[in-house]
Every structure is written in C-alpha cells, then in structure tokens.
Length: 424
Ligand code: CTP
Image (cartoon, rainbow, N blue to C red):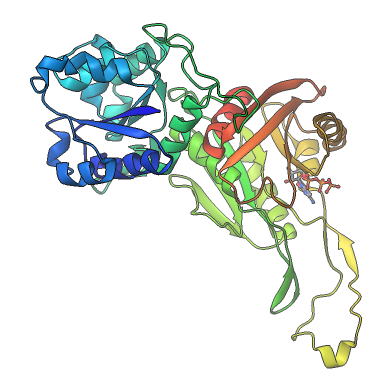
C-alpha cells in the first residue's frame, strides 16, 4: 500500500522517523512530505534513508507531474505525525499553502492525525474547535498522550508513540477503522482475513470528556509469597490497565493507579501506588475507593495465597520429593467494592477466560458479572498465546443485565478509549 507520512514542525518530528520506519518494515511504500518547519527538527537525509524515497517539501517541485495532487490521489493512507496546532488549524480551514495541505485536499484516503503540542495549546478553545470539526469530517486522531513535554512541564500534548501510530495506521488500512465520513467520501478498505474480526475501536480520544472525574484503576498481577525468594503469580503484564490510565489522563480525568508488578512503564500523569499481594491491593483499593467516581479493576488478582509463608528459603532436603502447598482463598476485592459502592460510583471489572467459543466466553462473563455485582464487565479471552503481554486486545463489555455494550478489537490503547467511552 501507498502511505504518505506528513511531518510538520514540532519537536516530536524526530519521532516521525520511527513512524516512517514502522510502515516501511510492514512492507508498505512510504512517501514523506515534510514541511519546511519540520526539516528544522529532523534531517532530510535521515528521512530519505529510512523511507527509501525522495522526501517532498516544495509545492513547486515536480510541477510537470502535478505533484501537488498526484501524491494525495495515489495515497491509500495519510498519517500526519506530528500534527502541530498550526497544522490542525490549517486543515480545519482547508488551507493549501504548502505541499501537505494540497495533498490532504486532493486525497480520498483515510487520514490519521497524531497531534503534538503544549497542553495549553491542545486545550485552547481554537484547537478544541478545530479538532471537533476535523473529527466530524472523518479525520481520525491518535493521542496526544499525557506526559513530559519539551520544557519542564507535563500534561496532555505528547505525541502518541511511533509504534502506536503505526499500529493504528495499519489497522485503518486493514479495514474497519477508516473514517466513515471522509471529506471526499473515502471508503474503508476491508482485507479478507484481517487480524481483528470485530469492529475496530475508535482510537481517537473524545476531547477532555473526563475532566473533573476521579478514576481509580488497578492493574498488573499480584504475587503471593511462599518464602523470601518464591511466589505464586500470574502472567498479567498490566498493559491494558496502564492503557486505560493513560487514556483517562489524556481525556482530563484525575487518575489514581494501583499497580502490581507491571511489565510496562507506569502511566504518566497519574497518582501511582504499588502493591505486591492481593491483600495489599485490597487494603489500598478500599482506602482509595471513597474518592473515586469510577473504579476499574483491571488487575489479575491471585485467588489463593499460601496458608503459611516460610521465613527462610524452603529447602529440598527438608521437603523431599513432593511439596504440598496449602492455599487459602483471598477476599474478592471487586465484589467487595461493588457491595460498598455509593450511588455516584460506577464499578468496572475484568474477566479473563479461557473459553473455546465466543458463546462460551459470553456465558462465563455473564455469570461472572452476576456473581461480582459490578456495573460493567470487560471480558477477554486468554490462553497460552492470547491476552497477555501483547499490544492488541479483543474485548466484549457487558452491563449488569448481561447485555453487550460494545465489542471491540484493536491496540490496548484504542480498546481503552472504547471502554472509557462505553462507560461514560
Ligand atoms: N478480582 C478481585 N479479587 C479477587 C479475584 C478477582 O477483585 N480475589 C477481580 C479482578 O480484578 C477482575 C475480576 O475480579 O476485575 C475477575 O477476575 P477473574 O480472575 O477473571 O475472575 P475470578 O473472580 O478470579 O474467578 P475465576 O478465577 O474463578 O474465573
């Protein structure tokens, strides 16, 4: 496929190299259009080497081949990363004073924008209106994430990571995620055997719709010690929970995050608490719950713990050929939070199931939400090769009555946004 990567003039332009590289490695032809300002942040030779193509900048180059419309006409996907506040404004107004502006106006391809700017600029009323208008016209957004910005400040405005942008772009090419109402009527292309059979979720955060909302999220996997060096644990990486926290922060929520043994970086912009065991998680969640409007239990909690924890390392010579462990049941934190929930609180649980069919998965999920008493349950299939440590996820969300609220597939980040939107 023919992918155009537009790069505009922000510090995050250096990260665009990773976006170009990702699409090239995925086997696509990449044409880079860099604005003059972008080339102050990233070198043309680097982009040409990585894209394996000439980098286009000048509107008046290649006039004989009508390049200002040809690139857009030939594109299957346009990704602009980073998209500055200035570019958002120009795109919203349909301004075509450079090659990128012309290309966007001349295309029927789906367009993915990865904004990057300071928090104040992202939240400025003009930018908010431009984003809303572009979204209405079918432009798709990824990010911005919340985190450390160029100066000493931090907040929403950081460009989404290159691999997330590439994953979202590839998903748009693969069908389901292309904008429904593209300005020139571009239609999503659906490839047979696409990796995600369910409707793709919307990676675009709804602008600041969680401002003033307090969200408490647990993630990761608890560990129950056997002795000072061993534990009983599980394979949860914490990725989906971290993605939920990142998504909630980027939408303006105040997020308190309780992590157990994360394999990924903790979410930025959230208040972080760390725990080891199920009991520690329970104590922390119960203490933090009263402040929360929304509680999401994404952590994989050990159902049982050893009855006794050995003070010293358990030695083979003393145990012999068979070691029998006696385990006692841990409290069900989600059920407890649901029982104690105030009228203003919404409680979301997760269900990891090894079901053989979708029907069985749904039946297990429906039985689980009835047992737990939470408001929503996010059900996902797990197995030896599914669900854990991967960047993608496929979930069904049911409500208290067992009705399906959404079924989505995509990156854990885009699934996180869909879950939040469903709950909102
Ligand atoms: N959970 C919890 N406390 C526990 C066990 C699970 O709060 N002791 C929460 C998890 O965080 C998740 C939900 O309950 O949100 C479902 O977890 P899951 O492991 O799928 O279900 P279990 O209740 O453990 O039931 P089972 O293992 O029998 O399927």
